[in-house]
Amino acid sequence: AMAAASAAALPPLPVLLSAGPAAAQVTVQKDKLGLHTAAAAPSPSPCSMTQGKLQRQQSESSEMHRRARATRSAFQRPAIWVMVFGWSLAMCAGFVNVVAYRSWHVFVSHMTGDTTSIGMHIEGYHAGRVDFFPLGLSVAILSSFLCGAFLCGMLIDKNQVHFGGKSFYGIALVGNATLLVVSILVPRHQLSACFAAMACGLQNAMCTSHFGAIVRTTHVTGTITDIGSTTGRMAMIFLRKGFRLSNLNVVERAEVAVDARKVLVLLPMWLSYLLGTVFGAYLETVFDIYALLLPAFVTLSVGLVYMFFRQ
Image 1: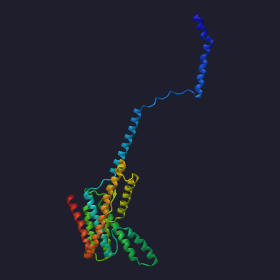
Image 2: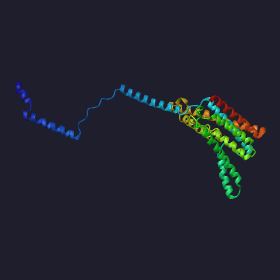
Image 3: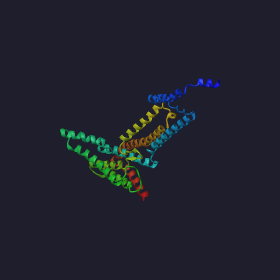
């Protein structure tokens, strides 16, 4: 009876044999239609997600620290004695420029105004309003300044302050003092102005840059420009962060620190030039053209000291 029941429950053998190809055919059709579902990927665990996040944060932090180090290394504040050297030269240049203007009615420490004067005198000479002498004087002063810078280029092979080696800073400083003394002794005022301009060109080419900061000791247009642009960048960084130092990231802190060091180099340079003009104005009223002996003495002393220690 049990065998009969089992036989009744099972389908016939032909039905079982035909079921296999049909199932295979259905499987092939599903493959063609893309109905098979891929096995579900295992979801990441919270621990692995936390580790990945930490790795990304560490990578970003390392990149920011690298950028901050690169920013700080782009500018290093010069040594104190280098800054004092530049400030003293700026003071001497302001002094010389004031005395030259009051004595010869020309500026000798910067060539922007002199170049403008050349342009105006060319037009005036062509129109018949002025003679050739003012134009010739402007050209002579500019050429003298250029000649002084040329002589400095022959003595000092680098734009950056680098005392020692083959750079003849001592000779350049002594030459600067000599030119100032000659400008006092020359009887003709126009020739005196040319010698003073040559001394300024020689001085200005001695130190044109140092550790990434442009340094000009005979005029302050570039200095004022750099002070303004540098403080503007600092203000913009603080403005974006709500003027809170704690909100600055490591790169922004490095940028602010570098800009602050630049300002501490450039601002005293401008103040030194201003102080030199004040001293020059006062002493010129007392000693007339002989007031130039003071900056000549300063540059001569520094040059002789350098030559002595270089030995």
